[in-house]
Length: 156
Image (cartoon, rainbow, N blue to C red; front, side, top):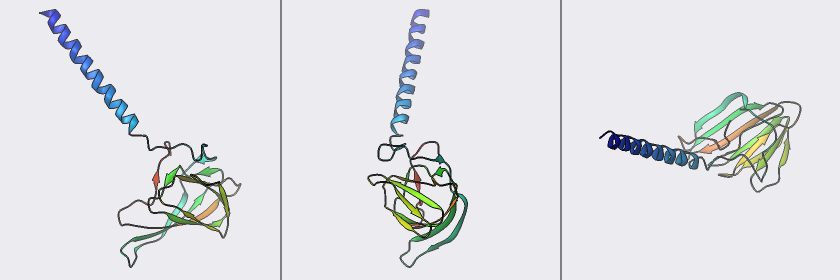
């Protein structure tokens, strides 16, 4: 009787271990969308959120879409985590210099007074590789309730 009970307990523990292993494997597979590289390399710069952010405008336009304009500072030597903008957007560099990294495109530098387009659903990052902080204005037009940015890089 004791041997039968031991075998039952051992079978039960084995079944639980198999289930837990399967759940762990599934959890790892669900992270497939995370990215650490653009065009085969990790963009340079320390991961850091935009600093001193402020919302300049957040309203609904005549087409019923959200118009969001934000201002922020990209500190020298930092970058945003690899991300996408589901509906695209625009960034204007007010001061400093930003290097934009977009999947499938050569990195490009933008200086004060220049703007660039962020295409929808394409992995990208932007870095301030200069020695002075850069001030940026981001503009997004998106459906109400949708996020302006989706981060794909772990650790951001």
